[in-house]
Length: 154
Image (cartoon, rainbow, N blue to C red; front, side, top):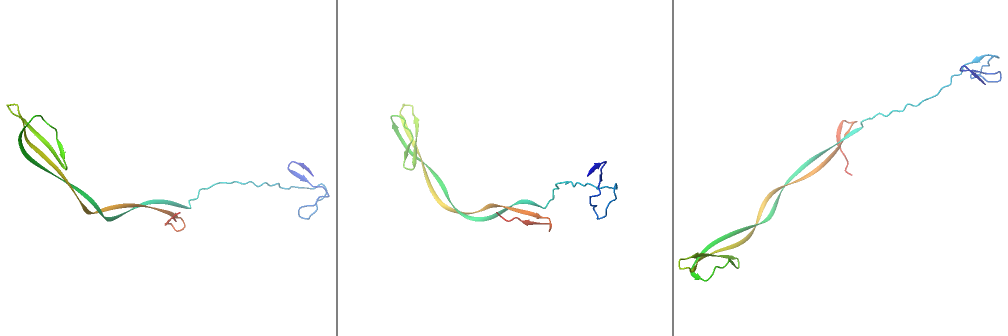
């Protein structure tokens, strides 16, 4: 086989492509082909996802203990001469605060004591409170039907 100028010369011993024989010295052109691949990526949207949040509210009745404090103040007259001042003292639940007065004779007179007593009481209080619970809802867009469908939970 000889090649020149893109033509192939076939000798007398060569078989033609379609069963016809060529005369001596006759030339036939054979095309030489090459296939090439052109690969391209195209983004195709097949669906979408959306997430929304739903807040559920429910009212519950709760029983809560409440503590009340009541303070009573009582003044107790003493009017007694004492040698020196003294500090407040605690007598059970009662705080005793001495009140002094100096007199001209320079005697210390205990005029009165202020007694403060604290009493606590507890009671149950029934109240209604609102509790919130959030839920996430995931939906997928179905391109075929054009609707949002719930996404199956994992």
